[in-house]
Amino acid sequence: MGRRLPDEVVSQIKLRLDLNEKILHIARALKVSRDVIYKIQLNFDLWGQPYAPPSVKLGRPSTLLEYQKLVRDPWHSVKCLLILLYRGCLSSLRANLRHI
Image (cartoon, rainbow, N blue to C red; front, side):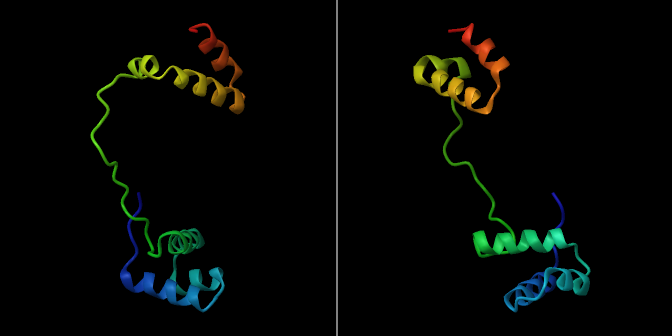
């Protein structure tokens, strides 16, 4: 994960994006890459801030092992097979069909 830009640079990017200045002109003026500006623009569109908020996994970790989840939810294996079939992973599908 890269470093964050200084707040002054981020505010300049936001200001220039709001004024519909071209990305290439912003990148040259502020000496940052176009990819960074595109990413910050996307984050402003999605989150309303220059960087995505931290994602926190809520709840406690699962105490069940993977094979226990399969026994508990018999449709889980069917769902997995359908996903594999949809993605075209036929070799994985054949291997999983042997276990049924």
